[in-house]
Amino acid sequence: MFILGFMFILGFCTYSILSFFYNEEYFPRREEQYRERSDNILPRIGADASTNAANAAFVKTTVAKAAVANTTSEECRCVKCEEDDICGGLWHGKRYPNTPTDDEIAQKQIHVVVSHCLKPLFWIKQRLQAGSYWPPASFHVISKCNQTVVGVPEMATVERLPNVGRCDHSYAHYITTVLAQKIPKEQEKNSMVLFLKDEMSQKNFHHASGRWTSFERMARNAFSDNGFGCGVAMRGPRSAYRHTEDLFKFRLGRYNRNADKFDDEGVERDGVKFQSAYKNLGAYYRSLDGPPPPSMVQVCYGGIFAASVSNILDIDQATWERLEQILTRGNNIEESHFAERSWASLLARPLPPFQLQALQELGHNGKSS
Image: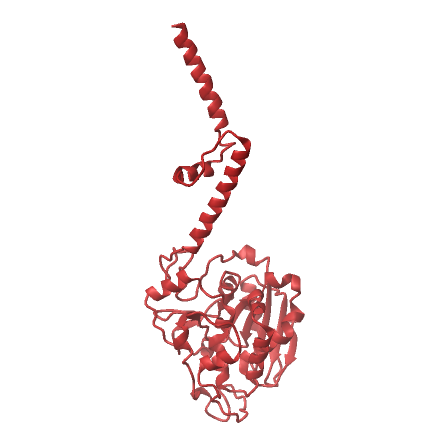
């Protein structure tokens, strides 16, 4: 009886000691759970201190590798929904991963450039105030039609240029000449530029498959993984993405809205031929010596968008200078329509393969207009 009692006490003490040393303080629960799933690859924890250190390093390395593998094997559940945080909204270019909150955006720098011709600019300040983005870090106006700039805020700088290349030339000029003056190097990674025309009304939008979106959505997308936010949200069956091969076949031999001596806004033409020397959009894009596009690219209609400064600076300065020079040929030219359709190809971050695959499997229509 005495011997049985002694053995019971000895067993209880041994259990208590082992329980103490195998407490979560020594072996965190995450590592225990990983060991339970991975006994076939994880060395068993030993009593030797050096062995335990090596094992702990192995656990950290293995868990890190598993995290990377999980990231690279992401799958989209849908591309036109709200419940998928990674791919939901991708079809229409509405939402992207790692979109910042409003509070996070409030800590960032928003710069504004406006291509001005005739319209008052009061509405821009009103929209910025509605999104709590006022005042912006800078406000630059490029005016081209020899008109007084009405509604410009006191903080703005105004520059006058010849009336060539429409808003696309204004934006290229801003990137090549003005951006470095407005945005200090230490703020580049924390900044975006809002590229605007002097009007953002439905009358000034000519694509039936989309509609103007808010400054808030543009800013969120520009600060997301995409680094680019289009001013137009596509809707219905039309996607914001196009097969590059089909898109690059686009050309526009004439532009009926501007067939008279004066355009729709009463600005006199310069008599320059509309049609360009480029065979199509693809030939124009290749002439820029920009980055080779992926198999599918975002297309942003309307000439209004936002882009992170990091993405802008990722493109060689020579490409931007070439774009600016190409757009000096005239006021109403085919090259402007090529530029409109290629801003996102230059500025949006290419989609990872799993997102491209999801767009393909959904049945992309491939239209290029």
